Length: 378
Image 1 (tube, one colour):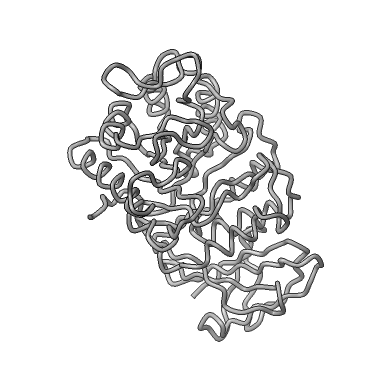
Image 2 (cartoon, rainbow, N blue to C red):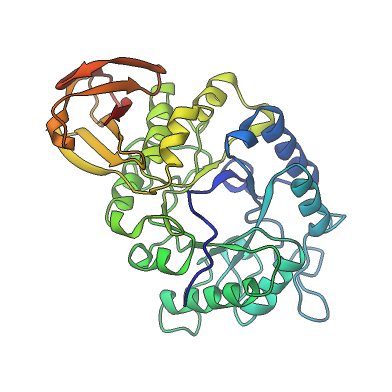
């Protein structure tokens, strides 16, 4: 099976789940769309609005499918239907994503697509879908494994894409993993590489509990070779108002940018604060994420345990480098240019937005849970 080439760089946009869970409707989707435009985020690349769990849930006071078995949205949330929502988003220069599950029913009793993969993809296409996110909350049903189930869904997407004027991006969200780190980007245009980054919505932890940012980061780095154009490793959503400090949120965004992970926001966007808006609007960090090589950063060395130097090559021959302090204390960190194949080089700080000099070895102070992001000029 060959995927359509629809995702040369990681997707950017907004996901409804972590901040709003199922508490969204047509009006909120329109408010999010308007905010993406008004803040300039759309022009920075944030164009997808992924409508997640909660748009079509079983055992409510409405049917989830019509007499032909075609999906129906919650009529209270979407009284004008999904095509009406898609038209509004497309009119704003944005894109729309829908959500389903490989099982009969998914997480939270959401209507799933098992037995109807092709029918449901056609339904999404009739609503002018740009993207479909497929979860695995319903189990692998009658398929021998999760890979087989997702392969069947991928084949349905590709069949529709052969004739559809608007092609559909396929997001593999096998969030329990089930080996998807080894095959997900071969089937989808991007694939989750770990469990959810948060178990207590919308709270994010740095490195405590079984769901946290550092664990998500480590899981994502099991298969950097599986990441690249048209098949990106996905570290989940950007919950930058989830309880982390400003320093940690800068690191959160920096990690996602240098890892070439999708940048899908999960914040109260219509009421976003200026600090968070400034972080997600860093065009120089975004350029690292959107670099056309699509290479995921790898760990080059540690100054000491938890004091890590990560690097990735960029399309023009430069390097992006992240110094990450995972420890509980501030520390002096160094970047030796020889570790990235240079004797000395001009360095630009992408958070301070300035060139800081030519170095053989750069030494900086990095606060606890802090990071530095540099462009190293070839």
